[in-house]
Amino acid sequence: MNLHASQARPPVLVIGGMHRSTTSLAASILAAAGLNLGDDLMGAGTGNEAGHFEDNDFYMLHQRILAANGLALEGYTCEERIDVPVTARDEAVAIVERRRAARHPWGWKDPRTVLFLDFWADLLPEARWLFVVRPPWEVVDSLFRRGDTAFRANPRFAADVWVAYNRRILDFVHARPDRTAVIESADVVAEQANLVRMASDLIGMPLATPPSQFRPDLYVAGQPSHRAGLVRAANPEAYELYRSLAELAGAQRHGLDHGGSPPRLAEVAAAGLIEWNKACQAIAERGGFSAQVSEARQALDTTSQELAAEREAAGRIQAHLDQLTHDLVAERAARAEVTTYAEHLTQELITERAARAEVTAHAELLTARSDTLQVARVELESRLACADREWSNRLEAERRSRQQAVDALTAQLKQERERADGLSRDAAVLVCSHEAVVARLEAEREELAVGLRSDRDALTAQLQAERGIYESLRQDLTGRIEAARAGRRRAG
Image 1 (spheres, rainbow, N blue to C red):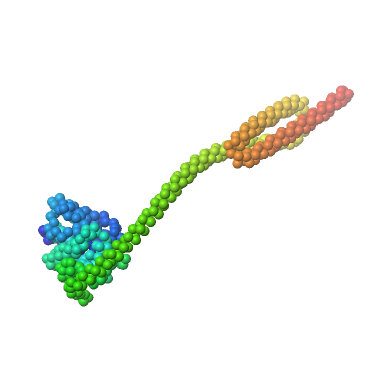
Image 2: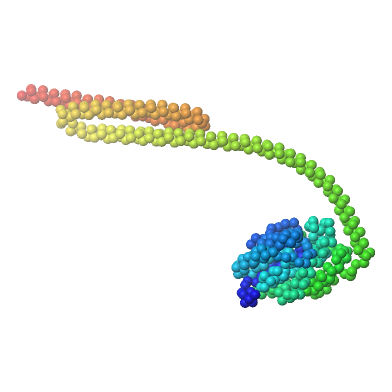
């Protein structure tokens, strides 16, 4: 493959290691430091409550390859040769091309990658590899505590799988020392900055130092010495293999001696008796736990019955609530209708008040006219002969006009009162609470009617008084004229 082309591609860092070797913690630290581990990451699960940080594209691809070879999807296998189908290779090429197109540092983490190291190394010549190694006894303990079914019938299989994975890692590191690095799980936990520095050196780009991603409750370190001896007795290669990887990781700097000397048969037997005793205690505790589970199930059944009853009651309450809601909607509609009627009555009252103001203005105009008549009294004396008939006709017409206006207003007021009474009755039937509003409108209407009647009577009285004044003036002028005529006849 063209070296220049591989150098132009964005750097790639692959995080590998046996299952339960703190690879998820290492991946979370590097992701926080700026390494893109994918856009579709696997969520949290049993044993990885903080998340797996595994790209689902690589995870599903590895599972399909394992299935094509008739192997467990978890990747628990000691097979040395695993064939990659052509379709899987094409899919791998497509995934790689999509990641390269982003043009920024990227990588992935999946323990199953260890089973296909040569395949990925050929496909990604620009890739660098960071392997996390954890003591086999700690890995076995973590697998047992997680309860993986693959190791229940054959516990020794856990140590064999650890050996199969880490033998591949050791061979790969020896074959490509310039492209690989190894770090111990304890250093991942204790020296986060060192992990980031190692990754930066591998890809040739600086990464940021993120805040701590470590959760003490998710990591159990150290095991009793007899358990390390049991793992060494079950698979002697595990200890030597771990020592070799630990030396590559620089463990000799800490003066560590993992596993001690090979255990004697008596020590193995004693360790077996201890585990046997613990297993018996666990069985006894499980019996007690079964009783507790039975009691809990009974309590759960009782709670389920109570919950069913509560749900039934809640259903009835909901039905009643729906009915109340329906009634409330109807009540609001009725109130809206009454409000509309009230607004209509208010508008009619405004109209009536406007009419009353018009009548008052007319009365003021009549008063002004009376003043004008008083001023014109001298002129009337000189024009009495022709003005008497004219004023009599005008006064009679004005009286009839005013009487007609008063009668019309009285009839209109009667109609409005009858209409208001009908509306009041309707409003009383619809909403009793609006009786006060209708009563107040009725009182104002009555007050208006009384005012109109009073104005009408006052105007009538004023017209009668003016008519008497005009009549007296006419008689007085007529007497004067007659006296003047009689004087002229006597003088003649």
